[in-house]
Image (cartoon, rainbow, N blue to C red; front, side, top):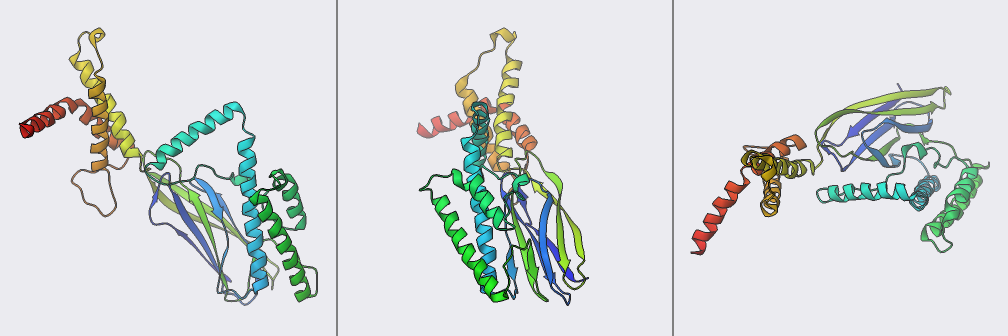
Length: 334
């Protein structure tokens, strides 16, 4: 065994938020490893960003700059794709996109998150393996940017820097520099591949598996090795699950009470002020009993169903609560 591979995941993961997963690889063998790549196979949510962080490395400053330039240019290409994708939406697709943004904005009231992700099936297409990839990505995506676009200027500057960097590596090695896929590790060196993932919207807890594929080549034997890493994680409900359940439950509870008190049903009338108050009261109660880390409460709920039950009970007895509060206020004012 010439490698030590560790998979690290955030201790607590909540829906609608971003969480991190890191794959660390250490070369404990006696020969150099090349072409080291980590590919996510199964994720819970959408991949937002992946990068490479060298640790205890023996790479030169020029090699480090070469790797950083390629990573930055790949992110610029992904940003250009995002802009091109949004500009190319049809009218119906824009309606769906606005709907998604509304849901994201609502989720953002309770937790910060991004509203756009680069599709995972574009990860390989947007990667730079050789100079032809640079030219192709420039013509297909960067060329669509405006002439005075900061993104286009940044890409062209990085392209010129990358050309000079490759020329410097070629002079150092006395042979043409190449874009070798993956990362190289000398003996006792290590590298970390951190992934930033956006968890899905969840109304209840979900148990899921994360799976990654690690591949590398041993220079000494020429053998290509592929390993699979799997980690089971628990993703807790989104922060908006309990408050939303409380408000929806309050509406249903108010409807149940109004239906039971109105006979026949044709005489049923909605008191909008009481209904609005019930919704707000359901929201407050749900927020009060929602589970929080390191906090002890006699009654706690952590998902949509728990919030719905609390909200329904609140809606059914909201008028009694309002009458009690009203009498307290009148007594104090008197």
